[in-house]
Image (cartoon, rainbow, N blue to C red; front, side):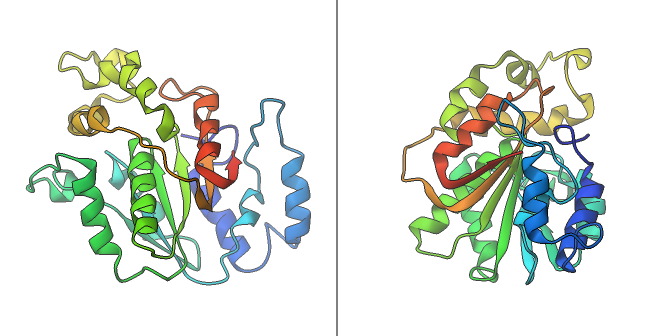
Length: 250
């Protein structure tokens, strides 16, 4: 899979590695990077990923990335095992899934968030990123809000393939989401039949989630979208801008 029209996750990792060493695929400066990125702005407000797009994330110290994604954490094993220099990647594995298949499945997002917050105690205050994919982006968002309520230092938030939380009711009614949840789903209609059992575990969490208005987050949020994604459309991803004072859509 490729994000929007740009590089694969492996290429992004390589780009991050270059930035962490003070260069971008060569010797271009951060100022040059900003100029390059502006050249890829489309009329619909989207920025195409390009080498240097991650110049806005200087890895001057160790970052810990929490990949709060459901249901396929193991898909990112190669990225987790060999992350860019300066980045310590930590996957969030939810109970009832993959290596935790023998544990009871969480019945609410608040239960999941409480568990994640307990695990984060050792890294609160260390610069880190929370990255959430699909419904994992919603979970990551709720985690950041919970940290704010506790008065803790906040990470920056990256989301991929995630509808803005204030538009969650659209997801809860979207045909393809409902087909994914249904027991009689036909593999031909769905992106991946292999993910179905795990995706169904998330169905109660998705359907129960209710968005509540709070002040925008005072942290950067970067949202990645795609033009050919039946699950979430670019304008629905762009609505993340309402949740922060510092938003970037790629």
